[in-house]
Length: 398
Image (tube, rainbow, N blue to C red; front, side):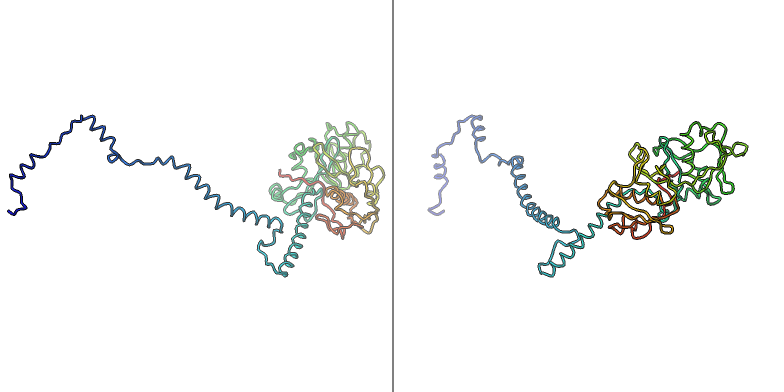
């Protein structure tokens, strides 16, 4: 062993000479000391709920920063679109030629807009007549309906498919149509009195309409029901020239108020007027004139006047005209040039169609002269207006 090495005796003496280490603390003191030692504690984890308000606020700020520029851009584009016609592009060239094209497009748009507006205006106008070229797969059947002892000629529009189904044997006449449908027409639903069908039977002989009436009929209780009966006959069976009443044995008869058993004239033209139902619905209706109207000119002129307060004139108060006949056309010339746009469109339409229906009673057409416009709604005012098939159309599906 070298000099730096210690022998066992010296090492043992050194260990014995060292002081003894003693800990006089109690267990409780040691445990308390350990709990206070930060090195022995677990690291604290932050509660995530405390961060939620901060996160939400940051997200809101981010969202606003993204949306605001987009909203501003859209607003600018919307303002640009609002100030420009729909048919123009938002992106435009700034050169002068492009500006001229824009002006031309705007003018074109304004014109088309005006036409569209006019078309919408005319679309709201209610027509009171039925024209031949309007009937596609439809059968027109006119019948006189009653409202408070007043008779209104109504044209029922029946689908052709219904006609073919109900009459498989062939083309039905007006008497066939009446016998088939008169009992099922919803008169009260349409706003009229329950009047049809007639009592008795209808037939035709030598072109004359025959009505065989039973003994218990009530058509001649007074002049009022007698007049209603004859008016409904005229408005329903105007294609026949005369009506002959016959009794149950087939012999000619008459109403007691009439006395004579001669045939009654069915074709009797009257001027047309405006009839307003209790519901406010407007119809065109013929009415007894103040004066005789043997000619179409007299009938059209008589439309200016009203007999009683049941109907109203179809002619506006500040409109006046003269009538002349040219062959089969009644020419109505307004004394002051008529601007149809200066009036309510339904009022003008009712006047024009009233002219047409009045002239139809005389088998005539009408032509209007001294009118600003060349057309009105579906009518060409540069030529004779078409002759209607009937008045006051109503859809009817039995």
